[in-house]
Length: 328
Ligand SMILES: C[S@@+](CC[C@H](N)C(=O)[O-])C[C@H]1O[C@@H](n2cnc3c(N)ncnc32)[C@H](O)[C@@H]1O
Image (cartoon, rainbow, N blue to C red; front, side, top):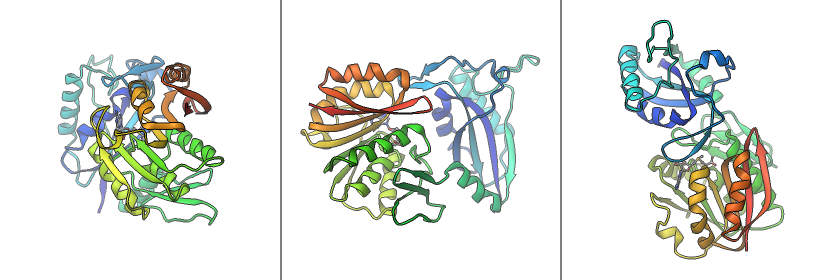
């Protein structure tokens, strides 16, 4: 079976809205997002490339241009697709998903890049968007790859078709580094993977702390479903996977319980969640916060100090950082 790919550029704070929107297009199979390496700033004149932007959820984003690539199992109707994309852009009152065409004075000029991919190349495409990650003791591989690691490595198999968390993002990598660091001097028993995405952090923790109980929480239904599938792929049973849409949800927040909590969910949420974490985390236990830009870290440490947490260590990669905090 041959496939078609349609690509277009999009600014950071809109990438999730557009990725969800294209899922309803006729013939849609999947999509992937990657950072556009094209550094020609002139081309991106009408993109507002300040340092940081925030979206309607109060999440902060580093300003980058992304490419959203959408895969179809039938020849896409490009006119129809551009009409739909233009419609969403107008609804969002944005000019930031296409270039502004100054000559034509057409705000929504169509720059969709379409190509047909043969089945052979499709595998190559898939691998490119989810390469194997060899990080510390972890060997993270997609369900399309074969396990091919040495016995000293911890293999983690991840299907990342619909949720964030393949291990390729800096925020996830920093959390995995923090996990390795903690595992050198402590054993965690009750772990919470808050904003689990694919479940990558909870699954990695379970593989390191074999006797632990891990709870997974996400506001996104797709993430919860995928985490359940990834638990099966890694032969992990008896873990709890919850869906939450409130900061003070039930089930997993009944009492002071956890000795290791991960939250890779961006600045705005992390700020709001401080009281909840101070309630559910045992004394002398670890909280790993991620999804932060380096410049946001001092503020968050200060904020969490007020809730009884102290800084233990910071990990940083390409402008993104994670903090290990310890509760008092
Ligand atoms: C950046 S991804 C992190 C995924 C994975 N934990 C990782 O480190 O790769 C953030 C995840 O948190 C979820 N999320 C965002 N805000 C949340 C909230 N307030 N409560 C629970 N989950 C949330 C999102 O749906 C998404 O799956």
